[in-house]
Length: 264
Image (cartoon, rainbow, N blue to C red; front, side):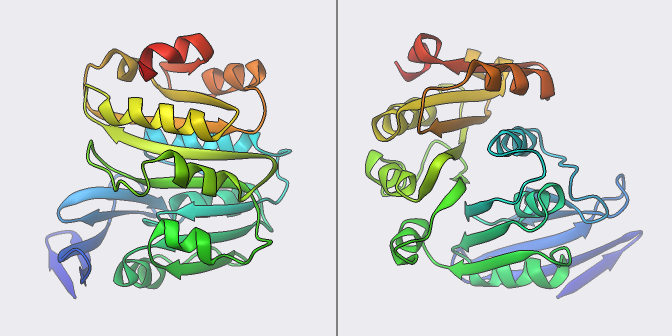
């Protein structure tokens, strides 16, 4: 279904799993860009004209972590748990052509809608799977392994218990190649209750963990997103320097004892 009005064109699709409507409409401020909204709330931003440019701050931070996961421009294997509008999959294809990617989405109608209205760049190697993120991990081929696993599902203080736990992170970490990283986007309220629990759970599953966000997020000033990064070896100070330099600014990276105060 599409609706039109003065200067706007909106495509809409009903999502049976949640009972909400998803819409895609052009971003009138950035040429070649589109906004995916679900239930009236903006969920993703896609720049078809330049997929290497990411609009949302937290997704840019994830993209910068992905940049560090392998040599610049080298193809990687990436698993996306939570597909959205596939913004990060498009970014990886733009910055690392030849990468092989796998995307899991709970809403079949959403994934079909996105791929129909916002096609992936030519040459993208993308396998899609409809279902629960944890079930999808178990259903992967026994030898399937990834350089990067990205979990972008948590959107508030309430999170699915079977995903927000040590056991799930252990299962995800088992799918990483040597040197691979597990990246978790945690959307939370100022109290950072979910962030604290996920730092603890991820630390129990992986050798080291870092938290990356806009500086004010760690002071509990407002709701927003904190990116957690689990690594198979000790966190590199060089990665901290790179992420701080790349921004968006102001940025803070917490590790070790500095992260203890967030984990409680």
